[in-house]
Image (cartoon, rainbow, N blue to C red):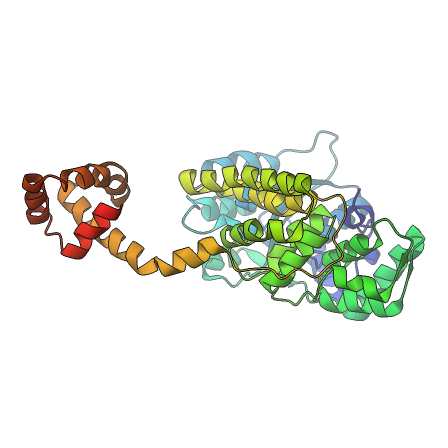
Length: 400
């Protein structure tokens, strides 16, 4: 069991740095009746939004029904799963509180009526509903905001995090210099979960943490640098730390995938570790392709688990060395060919309009045929004339 789970708050007074949010939540809960607004906890990850719900439920003897909104975008599924849970008494006839996590993920092009269905559930629920979000002021959540009470979870003060880390060290029998705990707390950016994960990473296999051990983690800013994120993924032995680190990186997981691929051989030295890391990455790639092909974003979390957590655990122990990480060659190639790809897409779009088909079908089915036809002088003239191909476009097809 990881330390984040092991030392999760069991009571409200164990939640640090969120006294105002707790007070607002209790006021909302005590006044709540069926048909009232839901509560929306908002703020960055690791500030105790989900932990508050579970700690409160534990104190009051309530059942928690938790769903992740990004997994339930479809209107019919939301009405079926959430709608039923919000109206039926639990198996042991205890009270109930419903938690809809990461509600940001329910909005967008993939939504298919999810926001409207969630609003209907809020209006008809017989039990209190708590939603969590990173940014409640996203324009995609405008309609939903009318049906919630906003409760902000602010950044936890560094001193509060240090006190929590000291408490954990005492219970685990670990000796740790105060300067190390302060550095962990400072670099967490107010994220208690990240701070605990970092402490667990440093404490792995030792009972004393020295000042020089802090370099294993690298420095985490609120907006993570990709090089420092790679350092954490390659140096840590903790899955949660490896997976959680990319939440604050201002880059798409698809791009981070190629950064990891490029730098595995630079970090890992043993051939069996390199092989294991690439095996994990290949499994992540299967989910990456499913996301692209099926537009099913539920697979993204499995992709991230494998490419970050799987790669992190591919080594027997961390390498205590400096590694100079490199920009992915594949992304460099994409950059160099960006103009050519844009020209190719435009040409295929124009051809597709004449053939009444999509750009994708033109690339897949027609361009290989056109490439062969261009080798025949008669067909070449016909193609160029019928599709108004320029010399540059003919060259694109011939190189395809």
